[in-house]
Image (cartoon, one colour):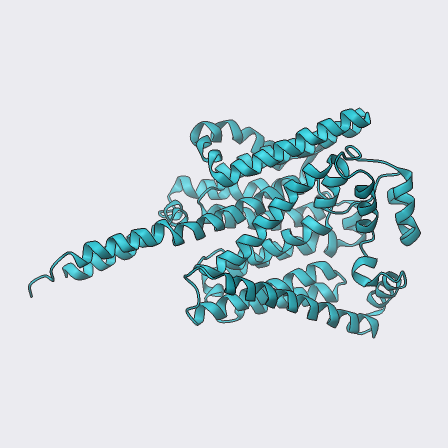
Length: 450
């Protein structure tokens, strides 16, 4: 009996990771906090026009921040959040300096500074509120899914009305699917999470949303590979080789999926609209990938012309806008104001604030990639959830515009990535040390008399 008791004690001690401790004993107070974690993003459809767009979700986070700082503000002095704030404040300082040098109009610099400032505020509140709690992270993800759907129903943008699945409904459903595959009775079934994500991807492709389709398919492959390695007991130790193999496998899958799309769209298997879209984007000679994202080429030219000092918040220059319209004349109404095309977190920050803004997003992109690869070395319940979230963030940083609800959505993604990296460090450090210490204590005791 003594040996068995010691073994159970050692097992419990080795499993006492910060996330598990925070999620033990879902008492009434904890359930209320989980409910709040759901409600915050679910209310994103309610917004106000103050300088720019301000969401009720952000107002709630702003109101919570003083209380969270008093209760556990010391957590922001951890290494990863400190780096986030250091680079974020540098981005803000660079944006302020750029706007002063460029003489940016108040209507533009006020929104530019607010965008960065609210990003930092939202991150601080989310990091403190969600820290160490898998339950709240899952609840917040589910709330995002519902929030996107409610936004389409009650407060749709012109883009949502034009293409509901691409600009609202699809990403909302994807979040809910990610929550579903994270549930234990789903994630423990061999190949089921990967299959669900992959089917969601093909459904998105059928509806003409290529980017979301690709992200879901890649996440499905990622999750299947994770389950394969877990079944072969290949998890649990550091391995740069394994991380390299995972990265190569995902890249090859992405290339294969892209080539499959080229064949399917080009031959008309995806419908007339998809074939026309593919033809229009490839006739520029840039290929379907760049042909649909020519903003990258224009923003690269703007960066080359002023690599260190940006062009200012909501930077405008008719020259760069005209370069884009040579390839995409259908976007005349979008860029008639002369706004410099960017359509990328990374390139947008670089164009507006200079190279310091790019460094901030490049660091987050690397942090996200590290989380996606290093989580393969541990058994973590949030892997099915982050498999999709991590892929979405990797894509958005390079290919999506930053602002609006992404001011709190992306900080949430970052908080989740940091949590997983902290779990990896725990299991490869304190977790293993605790298990070894418990084993030594057990070895020092004699077997009980029978």
